[in-house]
Length: 157
Image (cartoon, rainbow, N blue to C red; front, side):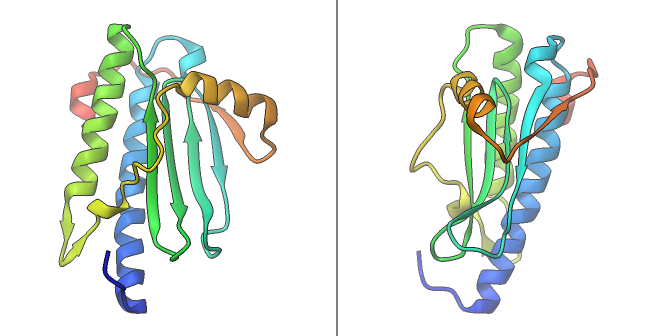
């Protein structure tokens, strides 16, 4: 990726943050459609966005993972993951999550291309194990039980 001016970096980070916010909102809405309480309990983390190589925001659920972080060059990046499952309800949610993720990062905002923000240098494919590990070891996350809203998932994406 080419070197950015401070103005370009700020505009890029704002565009990535806006896309991440839309993805996060949809993620919560998708998780809320799951009937099982244990799948709607999320761990959320907020951090300092002004430090390089740090986490800005993160949400961990038993079937989804989403993180906005700052890399060593102070660019925002999005990490993600989905639980591998053969449960039709879970597949519908994880599939909708992936569609939203790719739709939002493929958009162009004026001349800003944010496709590079989607990081695949590591990918979480077992969110339930990550959730359990963080449940036992994290001091930085807060828990939220998303209220159950059985709406049509297809409308959310």
